[in-house]
Amino acid sequence: MKPISYARATDIASAVATVSADPTRAFLAGGTTEIDLLRQGVVTPSGLVDINELPLKQIESLPDGGLRIGALARMSEVAEASDVVERFPVIAQALVFGASAQLRHMASMGGNLLQRVRCSYFRDVSSPCNKREPGSGCAALDGINRGHAILGTSDQCIATHPSDVAVALVALDALVHVTGPNGKRTIPIDDFFLLPGATPHREHPLSHGELIVAIEVPALPLARQSLYLKIRDRSSYEFALVSVAVALQLDGNVIRDVHLALGGIATKPWRARRAEHILLGAEAQRANFLRAAHEELIGAAPRKYNTFKVELAERTIVRALEMITTMGGRA
Ligand SMILES: Cc1cc2nc3c(=O)[nH]c(=O)nc-3n(C[C@H](O)[C@H](O)[C@H](O)COP(=O)(O)OP(=O)(O)OC[C@H]3O[C@@H](n4cnc5c(N)ncnc54)[C@H](O)[C@@H]3O)c2cc1C
Ligand code: SF4
Image 1 (tube, helix red, strand yellow):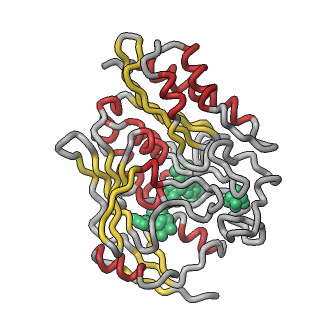
Image 2: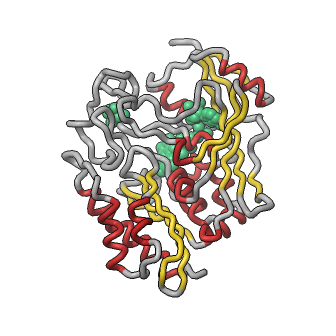
Image 3: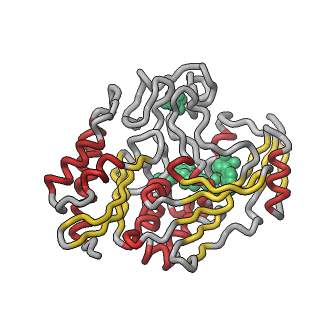
């Protein structure tokens, strides 16, 4: 057994300094991803820096109407916060439909963004996997790829990004605030998740030792009219086959504004900009929803076992748009 050092950080500066000082140290939040991977031998840190005592748990409404979520706020706390439920329902729903009640109590928001893929070959250290071991190959390309991505794939990796709430946050143009050895910076969430390309081991733009301190959701009036629709093999405790986060505002029956993002089918939480472009200014009717969904999936590259995801994604987009427009979506 390999020994691992453990330290409990009491302030942000020392947490950052301790992890930055050694490339083999890692932050530990709820541990629901990190400890699993450690047990499976997928990650092999020499030391863990527990960040749970840092003052990063607050969920605050901002004066301009936005929302700031501390990186250590638990998924369950955010899902239940009245401000989130009322003004950003898509976030609350994406959280409630994720994992299990026990996991949601443990799992932090920062850790959620940085959770690792659920590809079974990634988690089996005897399989080739470019993400775990660059240059070793990708067992999923010609393997069991039913759960894998059809958008944003490369010939190096086709793993789906697993987070639900990240899809909602991408739809709402959230910002990720980080603090690192070189100071603070803010990253728009759509830039926070990287496509695999030729470097699937690089999943985000953080450098070693950078700590997520908060997630900020801007004051978008249409966020009140939003929902998260998740399709999965069973109705709880399961990752998405396809999911849709949508926020929409109508003017009469015309779509005045729409934000749409997809989960379960892409290598990063997928902002559906092609579909948004078709929907903006269009009548809120099924024919336009079908056209938008079809256009978004035009670039899909399914593999042997996941071709069904193309039609399932189109149908789920249409259903989510029908649900949100039936609910109101009125200015
Ligand atoms: C059985 C199971 C089912 C699940 N189902 C779902 C689901 O349906 N939907 C879904 O979205 N998720 C699901 N999850 C994933 C779960 O939501 C994540 O494991 C969890 O959110 C990770 O948060 P954590 O605090 O436990 O992170 P940890 O495990 O502590 O950390 C995860 C990673 O992030 C790093 N890290 C943590 N916090 C920070 C920070 N503030 N700054 C920088 N780095 C940090 C750690 O070093 C580590 O690399 C499931 C997990 C399990 C085990
Ligand atoms: S899909 Fe990605 S994570 Fe899965 S085996 Fe291939 S390279 Fe690894």
